[in-house]
Length: 194
Image 1 (cartoon, rainbow, N blue to C red):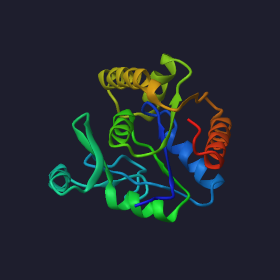
Image 2 (image 1 turned 60 degrees about the vertical axis):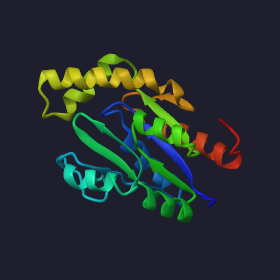
Image 3 (image 1 turned 60 degrees about the horizontal axis):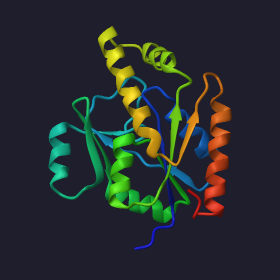
Image 4 (image 1 turned 120 degrees about the vertical axis):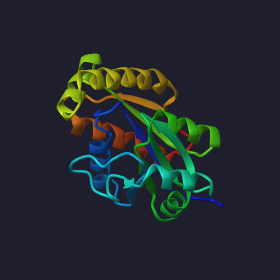
């Protein structure tokens, strides 16, 4: 079955601005939508069910694994994350662009499954910025912060497989959004671009 919607993957290390960038892009592209993924992790303060993620128990997630429910899924820091197959198909059939903030592992699964997409990775200016963003998020011990920084460095190393890598400079999110919007516009008019 031919889907029309372009899947745009926006990834970044934790706190790298992917959700803010997607919110900005949704305002620019009127026929776009954000694909909400499913996770077994606990809801963070300020997160909303069905807007940020769908939150289910690990047990429920594992039940869905046996039913071909997910296009792709992975387990990170003890929590499951997955992309619901039926929802992705529905959104692609109804929107010109489907944004998703899956991580480098999710992107790798899309590659392996041969699902066409445009992938953009948001890079921090430097390692220190990774640490600062983790500290700003709050609620983490120094060990957790180090773990997050190390995970971020691993993700940056794996991001070489992305179509585009863009530095998301501190305080310049609007510029980042506009840069990505230009890439998407070019891609929509010339889908063979990579």
